Image 1 (cartoon, protein in one colour):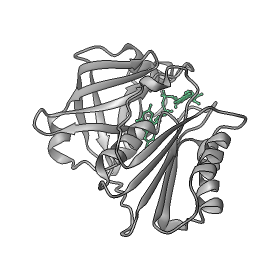
Image 2 (tube, helix red, strand yellow):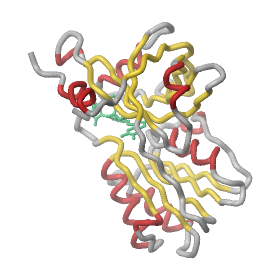
Image 3 (cartoon, rainbow, N blue to C red):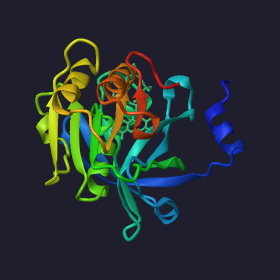
Image 4 (tube, helix red, strand yellow):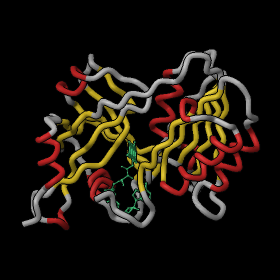
Length: 247
Ligand SMILES: Cc1cc2nc3c(=O)[nH]c(=O)nc-3n(C[C@H](O)[C@H](O)[C@H](O)COP(=O)(O)OP(=O)(O)OC[C@H]3O[C@@H](n4cnc5c(N)ncnc54)[C@H](O)[C@@H]3O)c2cc1C
């Protein structure tokens, strides 16, 4: 039997797992689903901040009965009073344990989750936040929009081809813009062009980007080369790789 090394490693690192039970399911589109979990241990032990994510343990039946793998998902709500949090799932067409689990999730289903300590802060003096990604980054983008002070201008760019993309959850701020970008060529090429066309280099800009690996590479290029942002003024992270399972 293959070793469930991910779980073994997490135990060695003393990262605790906590139960989370599905209590509500809401579909924004046929391929984008919000799932609300009841998880008192989680809500009691975590403070929300933008982009906070967790590791969700999901069954991977192809690897054997009872085999679990972890996948990253972003908190979109976190409410200590009701002991609930929610995650948004892109229900992608290609099979994958987390996407497949979310497609068939039912009320009462229980999973385990592990928390991640990574915390991100924007530097003092930030006046414009540039947020760019695909729909897997949308949950994190919305947490930014809910958290940053009103005085900070937020420029959002999301590359997403579905015709019903306008139905996705979007936090609207007075001081900000949303731009949906349709893919052209490599993932993120049109997205990076959109950032270059809409945002001029200047003081006080912080860039954040996430999504598919090639898309993120393109966004990072726009942040560094066009906007001239140094390491302290941008953060990018790839969330998934086209054609490759997470492991
Ligand atoms: C920090 C972090 C936060 C994240 N937050 C979210 C989030 O809030 N919501 C969210 O939906 N995702 C989020 N992701 C991305 C998610 O973890 C990946 O999409 C993951 O690959 C899904 O796992 P899976 O088991 O469904 O597919 P995997 O087993 O990893 O992959 C199976 C196949 O599906 C493809 N695939 C995976 N994801 C997608 C996709 N989105 N679109 C098209 N094809 C895909 C892969 O290329 C592969 O061919 C986050 C990732 C990280 C690291």
